[in-house]
Image (cartoon, rainbow, N blue to C red; front, top):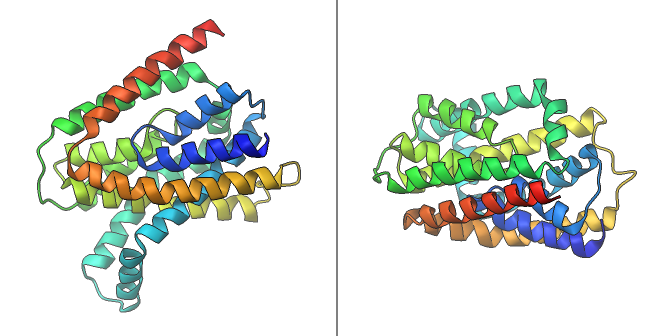
Length: 264
């Protein structure tokens, strides 16, 4: 993979990580269009690096929220911030279980399965359509809701299922406030990404020896910058209930991907 391709895919990742259109699905489509022939493990490494970049952009956008949470945690009091953190931890459990026990099977899905991506994009479109029709409330995410949203996040590890789309849609369909749902969705993935990186580094599974470090770095920077823009934009869009536009987009791209898979 050359630098230009990495930058293009980095921008795709940065924009689609926060917009409910499936970043992993678009990365797989982008790799197929650009003719990337990486083996599944290398393809997944590139995906992890770009997700790490967007995790950092999330921290930048929500730095005040994160600092407030950390400050309250250090006070060792059971308050709203410690409750919120506990909900984040609960939401991580399903994805952690999937990551620990089904990692090898998951890796094989990141090798250009365009038909799978197309089908999962249609699932994303349906979720977004129903979420857009839901009434807005002032309800906070409950502990039970956090676990259910976490299941959606685990399912969204499939390329083509939008993580933000699935988690925000699930949260909204459970009756939670749309803005709070978006905030919870963006923050809940940060510990998972950092945990994934730490696990792979400590376990020796993340090797950069055979990788083009310059291309990886270019993709990382592109994803980080694009992520800063997309995160801010998405929060505004959720407030205005514009999810139906993304539902239509996912449906169109999903159908195109399915047709493309049969023609190749």
